[in-house]
Image (cartoon, rainbow over all chains, first blue to last red; front, top):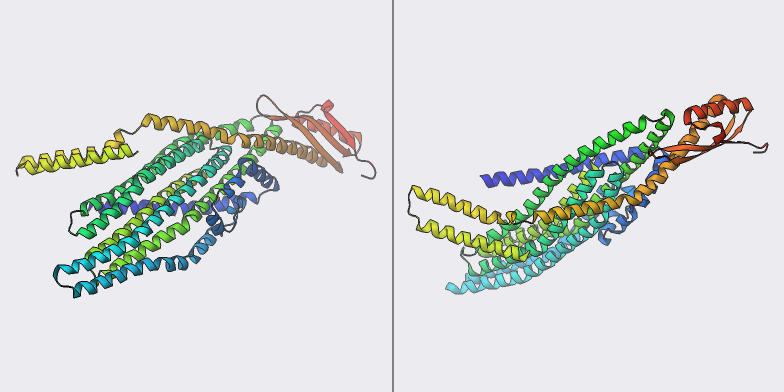
Length: 385
Length: 166
């Protein structure tokens, strides 16, 4: 009963995060579009600031495949072009057929192995039927372990790509956020994100990936031996991976929320004090200086939003194809396991399900990194006075 | 990391073994509930042990270093913003002079203003180059408006006139 509540709470949290992203992004689009239409002076300021903060480096830091999905999108276009996300989705959707075609072979092998093992098992006398099941398990393991190895390598590359991109994006976004008034909060969020990403990278390579391999090995052993002797071990390994990943995300979100709120309140107070000070010097000089300061702040704010929106789109583009591959393979293996259950031994169904879970864990591993970056970027974009 | 992982897993395995043996030898009685509860706490402590051994001082130090590092990201943008601020303010002063001139009836006016950064952090005008068409009376009235609004004394104004073709 408690597990159901915890699982439900996790689903609610993830759904809330995704909804928050969809609520924030349109505002970032509209703010930047409205502001950039106000004056040529503002456009000039944004262009100069964009060059100073290294927005071009952020564009170059995106991987080749992700850049193709984004259609050559630039930072300056990201916020004005509200169709960028739709284009990304349609480009990713166009690749689904190719991924399904490439992935269906492995699922077909599982189903065929299950069918043949069922046929031979029914023909062979007594204990000899076990040999047919073992042969099917061997074939399925050989094919699936190669896939698991490939996909874990792919997940590892996604982590590397995201970390490489974050090392360029975060300094640029932090500089723009600091210039728009979020001096303390931008610094705090940069430090928290970088530190958590580094810890997560180490944990993924030293802990999560070995646990996924161990889970696959134990699942193969469990299928080969039969019985429930190894079932507890495989359940523990799966639970460990899920718990570590969930704990990471939850701790990160809580830390960012608390630290961000505290730091943002001091930024807001400092900004209001600065505005009051400007306005009380010589009236004409003061008002011209205040307008100039507002223009600079507005430019930095628009730039912050544009870099943030580009960052979100780039992270989504980096993860899109790998996530599709992992997700489709997860579904196909689950389907194959379900189909094979009608003709073959339950061990084969369970083994197929275990490999599907391994793909799911690999997906979650990369997903955690992406979620952390989304949360960090969105929290920086959302700073308002 | 692998040492921490190994000691954690060994701790969990050891705690599992101890709790399993303890529960096996405890006879069925009221005391068994208390023993089960105690074994549950032992397992929780074994699971949460890495949290207690986490290097919080190292985490805090790394965090501080990253915050110091982030302070350096703003330097290029601050320089650009300072240049932009000067340029926008100078343009603002020039626009003020042009607006005042037109309000006084000057038919043609062009203005450019030099500003300098004062110790209080504000860009104050130090010299204005004003090119006008019109008589001296208008020029004197404009000079008065400029002095009132921008604090520029008459000797800080450089006047020019449009030539007949210009």
